[in-house]
Amino acid sequence: MDALGNAVQLHLSGGEAADCTHFAHVLQALPEAPGAVVADKAYDTNAIVEAVAARGATVVIPATENRKQEREIDNNLYEDRNKVERFFRRIKEYRAVATRYDKTAGSFLATVSLVAILDWMR
Figure (tube, helix red, strand yellow):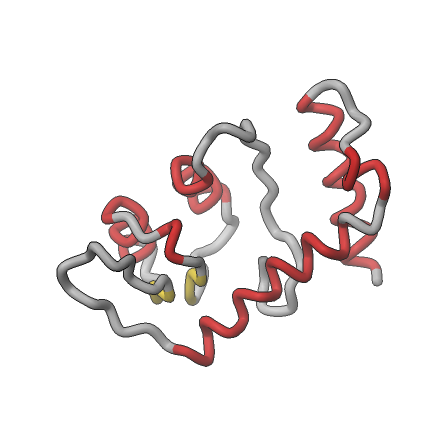
């Protein structure tokens, strides 16, 4: 997502796979280094924090309860995380996305990409 809540990179993974395992692919596919990466606690892994820091971006991921060292985050930036949730709400207004009529992953990704383009045009 960019600062306005528009999708800049889409990656489709299996429903049984953890999202954090696919984060490196999405980060590498970004055309330019982000200023900050905002995510929820599910993305608080050492590999993700190091990858974001290596790209020169600010890490805005709250620490999980089992992390020994608490990490300070910018709460104003973290409030922008809801833009991702609002994006998903907007694309699920399209019945083909909400009910996933497509049989293959490729055609579903094409449908979501088309809906993301339509969302950009709003």
